[in-house]
Length: 337
Image (tube, rainbow, N blue to C red; front, side, top):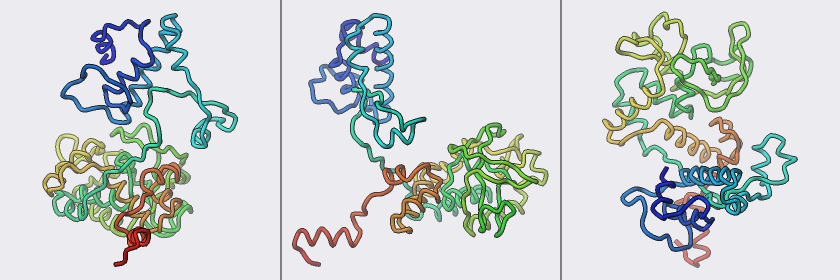
């Protein structure tokens, strides 16, 4: 709708729009384009981020390609229907990618590799949060997000049967205490996992799923929570780990929105601002990468990432305060400390 309003202001009909007009529109909403942009548009609003620009580019291409099929502005449709050679990443992500010879390309989309910078927790955030939370369930949530690197959907979707918190568990898939993160689309709280690994229950024991090891602190907070009055003895028949503590739905599964709101309030009380659950995952992954000496395989498996390429792109960057980094620069500069 924003683009259609812009066309009306520019007095452009669909059959008169050119690729340069579309590039100019993308520049007005936030893309980096080297051309005059004309009169301001969306005054007082923030420019689109990279993800929003990619979505807008896809929408514009789809709209004008459809117009070309209808016989309107076929020239523009031809300029938008570009193709490129597939990269190694394209082949690995595509079904039968090894036989692909070309990939669709969008001339309006942001170009170049984009290194995302994850928003991590401030130093000491975990300790400050644990002093401000109001229940054992909330303390478990903070500890499991911090030590497990779990996504909030994975944490809220855990069932008691998924927890193998002792050495030599019956599943035989991990010798140390661990949990099985399993995809269950029918969870009563709507929590779902992102990576859907196959799993099954054999003789009452869960096998498969995404296996993640747990720390001693995670086990400690689990037993504190489960042996308190917070967890109902009957578990309401649902068998899930995290439950609501107040109101008419007390004892029912705790939804992800509840966890997000709890962390937001706790962060405000602790003077940390709004704390988001995914910041724990970013901090966990970065800490594992540093502790393993930059080993991408260890970091991938510890965090449950899909590939080492994701870890490398987001987290694998040099620390400008590192002694080796500082020494290399001073050597090049001919300086000494």
